[in-house]
Image (cartoon, rainbow, N blue to C red; front, top):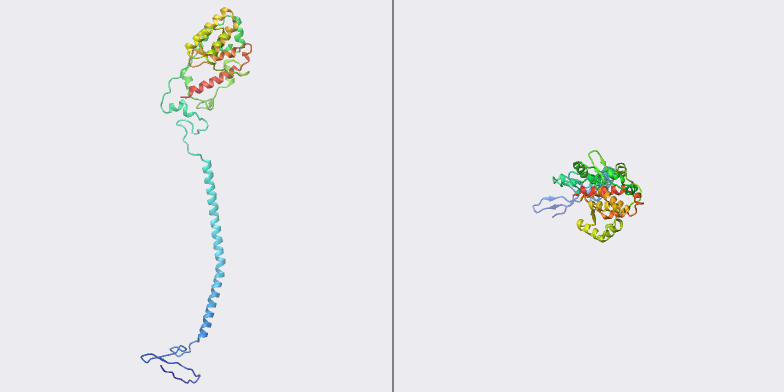
Length: 341
């Protein structure tokens, strides 16, 4: 490696000459290959610093311009997303209302009502068997019109007592012939939950006004209830109000197997008391026979409960009973039982 000094017309410049192994000259770092003076380290540092400051200034300007645009973009996105969220909330609210408004799917009864909340006992109604193709059997219908037609009140004293009870008109209100098919059709359309007939036109029911118009018995007055007696109490009641011996009462109960008496047995007692001129006892026997054949008839068609005899203990006040209301309640009960399978 050699060091030489070179003089120049404009200035004296020291060149550091480098030679490689092959003897080629390498210029120093202050000059380039064309002989131009290279910048010093301090100059390069200053230029690098200026470039760095310029880059930072440019970045700051770009950031200042980018912040408003980004804010506007975020605001636009928020405005676009807000209606979607509101719509989503409204849609969810509508779905909740729809779920609350629409009940659970319920097909109801086969061939019957769709809403089960009204006719709750329809599942046990005879109509369900008809829709399933099952015959519920023939309805037993009885009429005691012939029995009443054969009975004649011969004594005026008994007739006056029967009229004072308010039940005398029942002697003329029974049918000798009845239409079983028509009655069966009405029974199949009776529903205990509404106490009405469900017909193709509308619903129809039987009212107290109908009872008063057809039977002409009192529908206002005192209500009464009857008690179910055992055989001992029923036998004592027959002896007290009809003058029947305990032995005869027990014999009748053994035949009916309940605390009931036959119509024929009551008529025998009635005629016997008329012969003995025990008019009140004869009237009680006849009235028990009368309500048994009309108002409180049952499917046996030949017996009546002794419990109704208590209603005729006082013949002077029995006319104040609401016989029409009792008859209507009894009719509702029997229609209910007949319409269920």
